[in-house]
Image 1 (cartoon, rainbow, N blue to C red):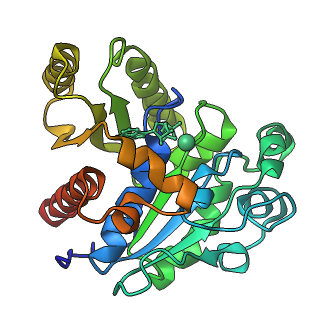
Image 2: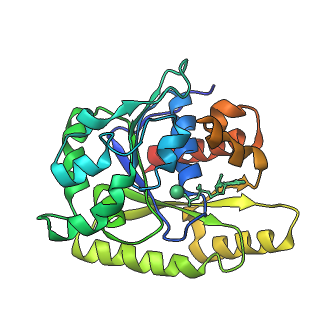
Amino acid sequence: PRPLKAPAETRVITVANQKGGVGKTTTTVNMAAALAEGGLRVLVIDLDPQGNASTALSIEHRSGVAGVYDVLIDEATILEVMQSSPELPDAKGSIDVVPATIDLAGAEIELVSLVARETRLRRALQDLRDEKAYDLVLIDCPPSLGLLTVNGFVAADEVFIPIQCEYYALEGVSQLIRNISLIQRHLHPDLRVGGILMTMFDARTRLATQVAQEVRDHFGEVVLETLIPRSVRISEAPSYGQTSISYDPEGPGARAYRSAALEMTERWARA
Ligand code: ADP
Ligand code: MG
């Protein structure tokens, strides 16, 4: 595999879109695997109580397992709760995971009454940033704009937005952008949108092509050139506790996510 260039500082990227089923988790785990295959040290933080990212990376996350809940509510450290993913054992890079268990579902409410409720994840990441323990941290957000996602925004340097190439694709996105502006104004002025990735693109339909063009017209350069194709192989991988990079290394998902990962690292090199 082609070596990728690590960023000079730890980069924290939160993958967000309040719409469910647009490819957040698939993008998080496949980008993580593509970057690890390219030699980077990656940490994935699963912020969705469903724990789909933990599943895809073959990480134990039954109720009671230590995870991001303990970090947010009980101030456990990330190193105390993280587990190493067996994905890509021969790669130069690596993937560690802070799992999400179903206990995290209650955190959305429990956080409300805690001090510094919006900055808890950011604080938990500070030591890792100082030590440069990882090249990259990818945060998989739940499909909502509640306090878990707010923690993801505040912890991040940039937001990465997957958009599904379908009718109404843009509708939820303007609400998402408004929320990011609110976070910038009140909590985190340096937060920016680092990339928009179009997912589940079906080249056979005119609609998908139209939507892709509309997204490019609307958002311009922040949209990645790479399109993630719709492919059954991509949706099969998680049930084997794998990403497309290991499950189907020469398949359409692995190729597309490698290309998206390369684009991201080239953007950091330019910035
Ligand atoms: P989210 O995290 O935004 O809810 P997921 O990544 O879980 O979205 O994707 C939703 C569903 O679509 C999952 O079943 C996933 O396997 C499937 N999926 C994601 N990307 C693709 C793709 N490119 N082609 C086919 N199926 C996909
Ligand atoms: Mg998800």
